[in-house]
Length: 281
Figure 1 (cartoon, rainbow, N blue to C red):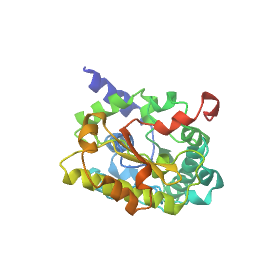
Figure 2 (tube, helix red, strand yellow):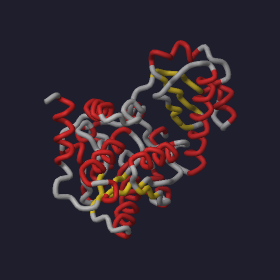
Figure 3 (cartoon, one colour):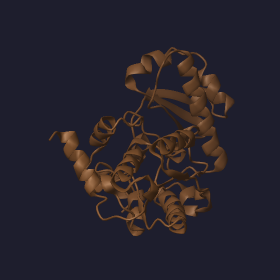
Figure 4 (tube, rainbow, N blue to C red):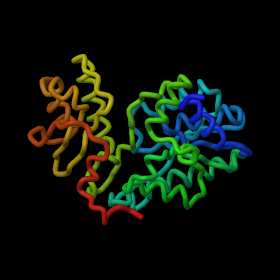
């Protein structure tokens, strides 16, 4: 048995004896694999995909999630969540993700129960569990949600490998965390601020596509005071630097064109302003 086949067996075993299951489904590689595995283990009628919709969801993500859920033959619900109603989320401290996940999971757990699905699973993987800046995991533990990828010991690399083995279109999809992750800690989160980031990333991505540059891992980070940072994969950084109009795109949505920097993409780059002492428990 190959390594990917062993991973598949370990993951499917996580659903043994389970009843009807709702999956907190963002449409990314992790939650997509959990959804696909649940369908294989339980059958599509016993699985529900739930995508939380709020100001923090980037444009296009809901449509992609809906397409994948439909291809797997599962029902897909899209409750409106209200992260901005939570003061801890708006304050944007090191524990912001805890308040976000609390709102999202409370909504999904309640909706799942109404629909007759007694359990909820998330896409937390083995790498996530070792990251000191993942306070959202605590929210899941408090609510008793299942974490099949973590239970099977699957890292992000293994998730992508198994997803490819199962021909899931998400196997190489770049990570797309919520828009709030682009805002420097301590800056107040608001609907307009999230919308500005979404418009900026959409405009930059379109500008690069027109120039023939594919930048899957692309971020526009809000650094406060009109300052912004565009991050793209290091391999395309020189080409992106030669594209005209990027500063105009950011100025058009309200950033200061004279205070925009261009750097290589690095996941969790804004965590640099935190220290180990800031890592949420």
